[in-house]
Image 1 (cartoon, rainbow, N blue to C red):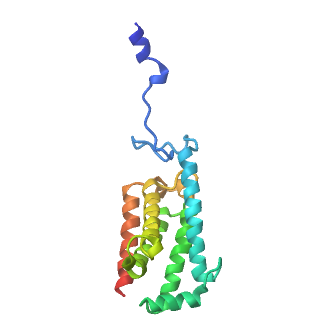
Image 2 (spheres, rainbow, N blue to C red):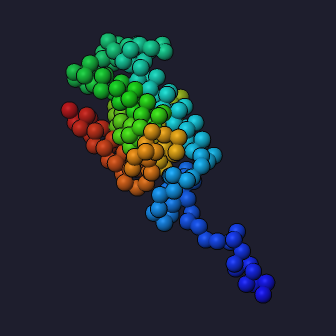
Image 3 (cartoon, helix red, strand yellow):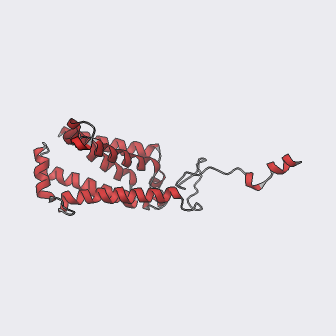
Length: 196
């Protein structure tokens, strides 16, 4: 008799397991309409805002000379010295990738595309600037670029959470296709740029 009560107890009912960010369930049903904001959503928002806004500011340094940056003219010369010709075109592409990619991640808009923009820029940075100096940033190495790449790819894989514009679109769920898109498009853009 006690076994029957335990098995029929309402607290033991089987419910679909939700994604930590509340963006879906393991059974494929959409729980977005009823799920509440979770600690994971707030953590993703904090990560996206901090990371995205800093990357946008980094791009604004290149494009507009804001936040102690050198601006487009000096950035263009730097890109030309690295072998990117015309330097101004590649400075604009690099700066916009950081600026718009950072803003996209910050607000959670077109998250896989925003991540791809940052991944592409960082692959270029590793290939042309930091790769020859080893791992650690103190030696001018790839440490910083690797961290940016991994964070961008991770946000694309996990999804931006419920506190994002993408919440209202399919892009807001994260997953293997979104991660593959971010890495594939970022890598392809980097390869094209490096081959020019």
